[in-house]
Every structure is written in C-alpha cells, then in structure tokens.
Image (cartoon, rainbow, N blue to C red; front, side, top):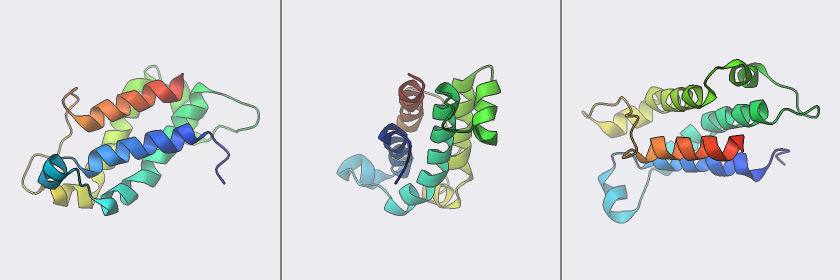
Length: 127
C-alpha cells in the first residue's frame, strides 16, 4: 500500500487522463481516451508528483531522493514540474503516434487540458 496521501495518485491520474485524450477526436465527441497511454504515462508522472510533494512537505519519515532534492533546490518548482511532466508526455512514442502528423510540442496555454491539469496538480501538491 502506498505510504503517501492519495492526493499524489489522484493528481497523477488527472494529468495522465488529460493527455491520454489529447488531440483525440473520439475523446472530444465521446469522452473516450486511450487507456494504454494513460497506463504508460501514469508511473512517470506519479514519480514527478511524488517528488514535488516530498519537496513541498519535508518530513523525517520520508527521505528525499534525487528527484525531490531537484525540486527542493529549484528556484521555480512550478515551471520545473510543468516542463518535466510535459517532457514525459512528449517523449512517449505512443502519444507521438496518436498525434499523427500534428505538431507534438505541448502548448503552455489555459486552452490545453493537460497544462491546466499540471497546474492544478501543482497547486494541490504544494498546499
């Protein structure tokens, strides 16, 4: 069982869900998303969310790892979290394949559900 609060799972799930339906016409009209892509993205995004949470909530019970130390030392944790989460998505071959011939660089815009999910996750994880 996970020793961290369910918040980390929830936020990683929301980010992965947002990108598993990114640019997919079926998701736009039917609310469907790619379960396979969601499952591929989740573990890596969870790792980022966990590291951000640990850097924002230091505890003697939980040792910081290299990734959480990176967040703790960062001058702008929000930008680091956004960049790293988007890099995970952009580097996934299944996501790139699902985008077809579309430009696969992720926008940093409030019209992008993934970007919004990352920002919401940042707020929730650092409270």
